Amino acid sequence: MKVDLLLGLQWGDEGKGKIVDVLTKNYEVVARFQGGPNAGHTLIFENQKHVLHTIPSGIFHKDAKNIIGNGVVIDPVILNAELDKLNKYNIDFKKTLFISRKAHLILPTHRLLDAASEAMKGKLKIGSTLKGIGPTYMDKTGRNGFRVGDLELEDWKEKFEKLTQKHLKLLAFYKVDLSYDLELLKNEFFKSVEVLKTLTFIDSEEYFFNALNNQQSILAEGAQGSLLDVDFGTYPFVTSSTTTAAGACTGLGVAPNKIGDVFGIFKAYTTRVGSGPFPTELFDKDGETMGKVGCEFGATTGRPRRCGWLDLVALKYAVIINGATQLMMMKADVLSGFKTIKACTSYIYKGKEIAHLPYSILKEDVTPVYTDFKGWPDDLTKLTSASQLPEALMEYIAYIEEFVGVPIKIVSVGPDRKQTILR
Image (tube, rainbow, N blue to C red):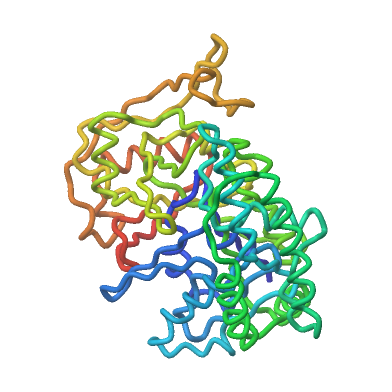
């Protein structure tokens, strides 16, 4: 048995939650391998909308085990709120939700540091979700982190206080006026930790070793998108974790030779939340229409997403660095009604036309070169099979497949799990 991966190929918000939910029926285990509550995975079924931030998207399938891997950073307060929202669905979290002891915890002061750091940057801010993700990963790599397994130690509050005091000294260095009640934040954290301790903690690397030996099927779920990867994304406007396929190995404790299929998800167009380069971004009526029809607002922050045409240069780059074996196109229905659809197929970079992602793609560095495609007027939301897809959409899909060299196996034509067409 192998571990299959599912990850985003753009700047996040591709629709990973929906596809994990659709695919979970084929898997016994679903595992998150990186990121934190800066992610927002939206699932819609039976006329209900669910937004998950930390819990894997297989949680609504009662027979699936859901693992929060060691590569994830966890805010107990946000996790507690998620659990509260799910209580009405009678999910037995003790039996279906497991947490790696090696996963790091987000402390209240991590969030304060995040806010102070972003405030200091002014116009150069990276667009952080202010969830404390970056400072938590900094403590992790700085070997000062506070891990889930520490909660099983008698002196865990002493370790918490020691790290908190370190953070307060750093906050003083930033000299930013933040209004907060630390005691209130700490009490909320301690209360949520007690809820966290009712869940099952595991040594995730051992869990996955045994699961594979027992021939269990496993789906690893990524957060954010490949272009936000700390190494291969549009640095420094990136997240703080490895969002690419390599992150599944370090974020779960799975060997590289145990990776199977890599499912890459992308939108039929492109969006981005927060700051950072976006070569195909639109500032006209087309971009406004994409945002309105696609309901493009961040699931975690509520911020409007920037919209633009599909960037095939960036998509091919993401396919290559992840070793994607099959693709899923999301939100094809949003493009219905456009007379002409464009896709970026190369850049003008330093006076030359190139077809790869260069070191920098700031506006002053690259100019997108577009290929035009005929649009389709058809409403796709009621379609149920690949044979019903309009010819113009099929031509668009065929061009993308040839450009990136990987087949598109799923086309999503709406937000509900039923609005999913297999090819």
